[in-house]
Image 1 (cartoon, one colour):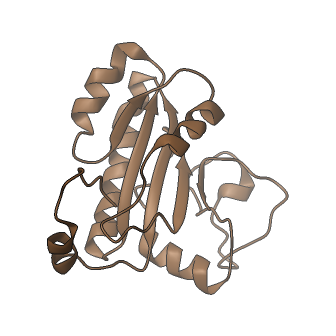
Image 2 (image 1 turned 30 degrees about the vertical axis):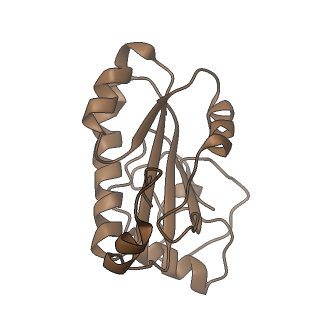
Image 3 (image 1 turned 90 degrees about the horizontal axis):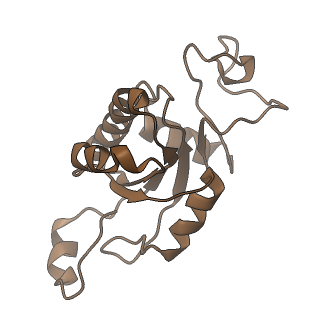
Length: 175
């Protein structure tokens, strides 16, 4: 998924592109602590790379709430994500998505939306396999295991591929 400027000949683009089975919109709903930037960039890069290698559409939006780091983050992520300045809580940032044109050259929007907090180590997630498993299992919402996280519900369980939990934390959640 990429922004296509008005007036672009989309017929020519469609001929060159693969129409992906999955179209991911990754949203980081609030970043502003400079010390979290390296991990966020590492996670976004790994997720985008796994998508590109497996013909999964990928679009990323990072909302920055700290004006002092906005231009630095924008220059670091310029080829990976759209970086927007937005004050407020993470739910306020999510409301800004309604104003965006989130379609690809085929006119399709995302099949999956991922909310990822800026300090999550998502660089080990194999997103294409996760999306296939999620779809085959008919899950509407799922989260991958996060190595080293402090809550048991977010850790990998060796006895099963998935588990139900009564605890939900928006760390890396796929809708």
